[in-house]
Image (tube, rainbow, N blue to C red; front, side, top):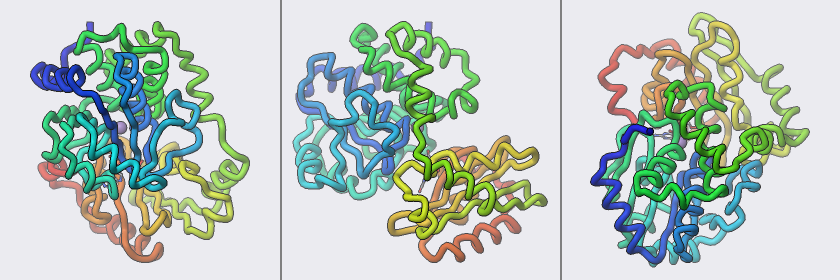
Length: 349
Ligand code: 5GP
Ligand code: MN
């Protein structure tokens, strides 16, 4: 048996929307990761199996090519490519599921259409401090992933039988990627009860791992070598590490969306390094990824210096200015940051 985490009245309200709705849109955060796509496609397959024939997953921008194999991925509408079509679907939707993000800002240019739509909005998410823009807000930061929440949501509606193998594949992909292949946020026994149920649905978990993590291009792997050899700076007195990549460097290695996924985690494999930051030139701003192990609240650091937030051990932010200035801001932060205001951590998202 799995514990009932999601509140019953939220399940019942969302279930009513599922039963009565005809047109469904599922939206998720910018530069979707495995959990964003896994939860969205997992729910997409469930709704389709349930008999709904007007269900669309809409994402703000392109997602990494190593997720294109996921069942249903080819039918995802990318707003950046088809803005009018995407916005019409959002406008017409009876129900809009907002998955794996906690505030409209995280869907960037999709936000105005979602906010304006009269469709009933349901948030299913595991980030801290959800903004109040949905009729039903299922926000449970203790969950490993939004994909795990989709599994629980389907079960709690009493519709486990309508979870197809395709849905199970997507849900597993999200759980696997958001826990670093079950190496963090993954100590709750029920996670493995769920994994066991997904395997019983017929998924090949070993194959899913290979499809996501063992499909690098040669230039991607060489970029990893370059980063480790030349671009990783260690700050031993701060137990910290920094990686930077400029647009020119990314171009040199034929960067494609997703190619730098996982770079920020690499320095954490050095003994004594507990805080790792990756700063890169991304689209029209500087993107900052932060990771930590143990108690260091990198969301607090992200909030204070990079206008961002996230989880205690995995967060992100952005910087408007040059790469050099972003590095200077990071180094200033290292010297002065004092994470002793623990009561503030809870306020960050
Ligand atoms: P990543 O480094 O993989 O882009 O992001 C890691 C986590 O940080 C995400 O799951 C998300 O919770 C959070 N995050 C990333 N970018 C931002 C941002 O710009 N603002 C906020 N508030 N959180 C972010
Ligand atoms: Mn997630």
